[in-house]
Length: 500
Image (cartoon, rainbow, N blue to C red; front, top):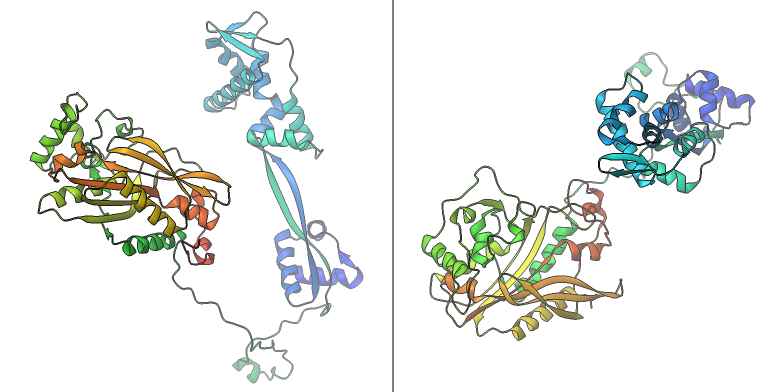
């Protein structure tokens, strides 16, 4: 029906200027008209051109502002000239609102009105008394919403302010204008795709128009496995570690005890990072009872009274804090386990690395996630110094493609000396922090049982930051997490590091 309406109209008219107006005139839904136009356009019977119109729609809250006034004006008008106790103000505001609104909706309008009136400096609060700061106010928000409702033009600044308050939203309408195509006919004869038995039995095959076969058409592309950009960069960095003689640490243990994650690293139990605001603690099982007791006692002693040239922290170390289970906040918890295991036998120099997931109770934004990946490398050997650490870092980062490095003194509870690592970013034309490094403290290493002449140098960085730089991604949520576009893994090329 829709196709016949379109073709019939074009028989006597040059064009259909607007599919929306046409659908109303013919009493046919716009979706049906659009589908008919698309189909006819595909077969060359018509030529369709896109039409797009934008319209601002008012939210339910905005519609109530049009009817009763904005929340801030309602609140301002509820404040008498002599002032009023804040406790009574909401009751007066509620009395001005329609009775069919529930208490939750009224409370929301009051809260928004209060915040906006205070922001506008229309009212003030002192000793629980609310007073007017101005004599009269204009309801500009209501006026703007009425203008938008009437289809009048409103300035970009005002539109932006209303959008931020979620009072308006943009609706985009799409339609077509239509003209006759090269294959135009008044009636569309549907071409058959196959010759079937009925055509032969009814002798219809003589008059049937068959659809032409396109022997050059390609089939649907086959779907193959694709590597995520994070995994590509991870593979490249793994190869760098292996080329430098490192071996991978087992990092499949996401759940750790506070002992291995914090205490064994000489991190005090009152350290801010151990607070629940920064750490995800487990409810079930909430604690562990499998710890090497002799080692635990040595760690307790060095925390409370020091040793190996240290005075310790001078506090009462609590076993119950060390027993708490958590999602590991860094892969250094794995490094601690590996070093302790290394200390239990005849000493052998080792080079370890890991690249895996860690968890922190971060506020999620364009540069932070609550879970991310940490790259960590460490060397355990005799006679190591800060010079060795710098040399290894320059070698490692030059293989990634970062040859311009700077180092800045820093503080870590388990490394001394400690250094932040900066690299010159050619794209941004400035120095950016890329990692942290240092030498593990004797208070951490000696309780493990490692010989006194053995030192450990280590460094760490995130996997996400270099990946975002390499692939031109400016929001970490577009790289990792549930909002990632799957086409990202299909269209990105192989990652190659160390090009300079």
